Length: 115
Length: 113
Image (tube, rainbow over all chains, first blue to last red; front, side):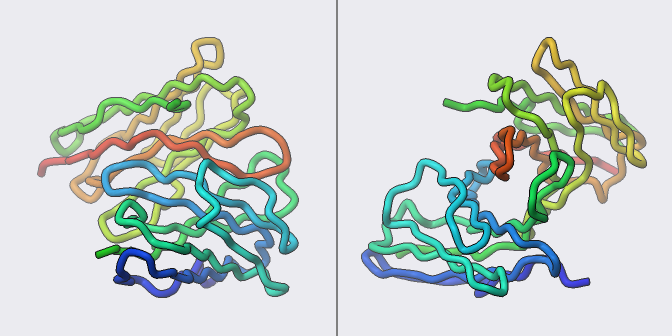
């Protein structure tokens, strides 16, 4: 079975540009979450989506936005890129509804570098 | 405010040793505590997880010990192997119907042959 797939694997942008990252969840999983992992740190929660609606948001500015499609795939958009946005962006999928014992499964991420 | 504190930052053991990684949390609303293993260039992979109403869980060579009153939990790796060399993260999920993991800062484990 395919795991969580993310594209692209690597991306280089310059300050001020915008970027779109994509994620396909595990088949049967209806919830998608996005995390940012800065080098040397643990992942930090950005968003959770289910049924195309935002279900939770971490402490990130409005430059970060996301959406979920009818097939449960998701896009993360970041506008007006800053040097500090350089990080590994991880997508996690999970079943819905949450019953307490279900983990989130992560993809291998998109490595975003801002020049 | 860091809600999940992980220690040590790095750990070196010999093959066959038993590395122990510790985590402490503050938010009593956390209801699910997974551990993830991450290799360079890869995403975090789930190792083992526990709920706060269980004091210990074993899966293969990996054991979680959980102390709810102290708000602490730890990962033990039995008979560690060089292939276990990776970064390990503890995490905690906020209670309720949503998925939101709060991660520790990670422990870089090196297992020498």
